[in-house]
Image (cartoon, rainbow over all chains, first blue to last red; front, side, top):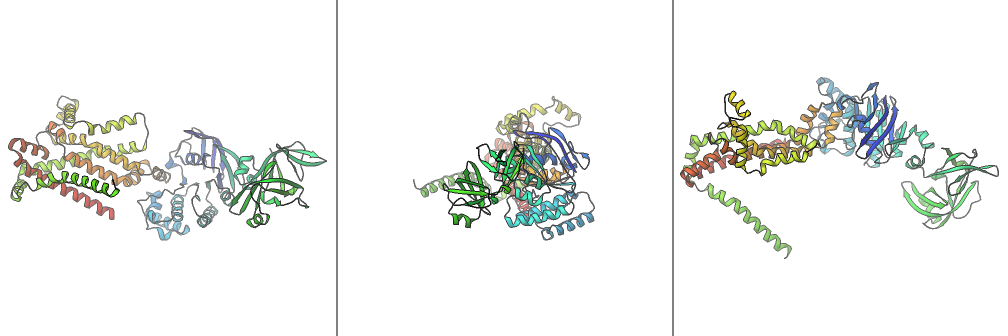
Length: 348
Length: 259
């Protein structure tokens, strides 16, 4: 178990403030945040490359706050792998086992390299390896010392999608083997697909901590919502009109809710997939119908994100076919339709 | 002017520079008859001076490297107050005129200083002793090693050292297994530079020790006592020995790189 209590660190302008959280044994813990949020500083503080200004770090019941790096039993995999270029892969793997019996080193290297699929690379120099191979070697070199926690700094950054999938599978496999993992990333899809605990970080602070389900369905504020890919997340207050609950936004837009209690303050959250666009007002079961002007058409990996100004800016996710059918372009008028049950109200 | 004309003019300037370097050396090499060279090479005074020169320069280089290389690592890795001043101090021997450097070193190791007294108590005297020659050579040549080694350590990514630490290695082990091997090429070229620079030193050494005579001093002595004709063969022999020596080092280096 890794337990951080009140960690502070000021590093020439970059700082982390009062960080506390616990990573339980067997967790796949994701630290999610944009670049510059302080994630790497936090990771390096846990590994001991940086000393915290205050607070305590406990690992497996030991207070490691002031321990030198080499005594922490923390396995850190660097973003650029940091494989020793003057040693063959075998020697890289053996590095952490200095002083162990020869036979044990040999067995461990063979066992682990079979598991990670790098048996054929053992006699090669790092300069001849590909990015994915280097990542595997880096993981093996760190895992061989059986760290109490495996710290990964953006392990999937700068990889193409095929390689990403491959390494993801590998990371899941390592986790299933019982390894506690803390993984730093700026990619919420990565967080969703791998983590069973997520902490969202920005400006040196943890904004939210919980299971992926909690974080993705109840984002605590606009930053978290936006960062985890939720486009429609608008501050609002519940008002009753004609006995029906509406979320009234600051701009005065009234959004019909499935249910709600009057005067409650919070946010309305609508998934972009749930907003239907149409050229004219629809006669349908959607109780929320707004007219607006197309502000921006943004291409995404899965289609298009259409941003419409209907008093509030709302985002609808549609396919390329739909966009062509409706002839959507910036500046045109369009109708937004969504059901009251698609609107989620999150209390502040 | 056309680009091509410019290229020609610059190449011509380059040829003049090359000629400027090569002409005196080639002239010197052909100044003495092979017989004369052979005789000079057999002259015990010449042989001893060459051995002394190579030995003191090599010894001084290796001895001072023991402190200079770790110091270079500190310079490469850490920021500390007055670092700029420290760097300037290291470069000082390069800018001090070498005879003045010799006077400075002599004032430091002569008999009435504490270092001189300590050496007298140990039964020898730096002045007129190979140990004194080593010190004079090291004084003027150390900056070459320190600067090369520092650049070498700077070129080693600090993350590799940190990665080694996270793998449980002690800082000493990290230094010897990561930092030193990866900076080795620069350190080696620094060692060679320091060795070569020490070997060619005249000004500082002659003030500390006229005897025993290193080759540059011997050349000077033959020149002032007997004239140009007598100084030439010794110079030729010295140049040849130095060239052969460096060629050997180069060969060793390139073969070890292949492995």
